[in-house]
Image (cartoon, rainbow, N blue to C red):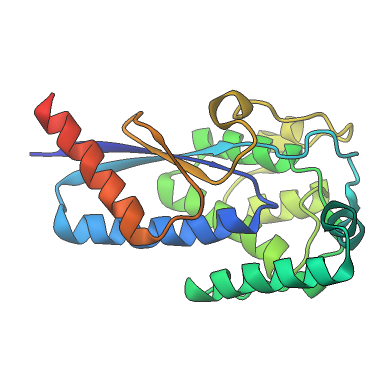
Length: 217
């Protein structure tokens, strides 16, 4: 008999821990598929714009982190920490390529629209391409031309998303009330939020617990 598991992920495109968390989630879902192949997963990505006040053109990436962390040494240490965590899940984040800290409002509007127009596999491909564009290629996710090109490669038409790509830097607030400012967070079957880029084994355990609670209800 089929069982349902809803998975909500609260994230922002500029948070490297969200990319790392996505990879841990993929591994956890594989564990679930092997152990409980009867479970049907409904995965929803809930955008949370961490920096809604950024100008539409974003700000210089290095300057942003220098102001936030206080010194060049602190920036290097933080980036080394992130790169080490990313390497565990097979990601090679290239901070040297990133020039802008972008306003991600348009990227979130794009993904939200795509969730209504694309199937699950296409949507995952779009999300992956957006992460790759930023963390591997250093492309500006605040640039509507960049977003449009990625969207078209993933099966969307310009007319379907034109109103999502605004030039005024307007914020995306749809996910803010659900997860506050902390990302990534995960929720299984509307249960408690699991905070942080947790290991696959922990996410898998949370999935099993959520499924068991449904069985016992």
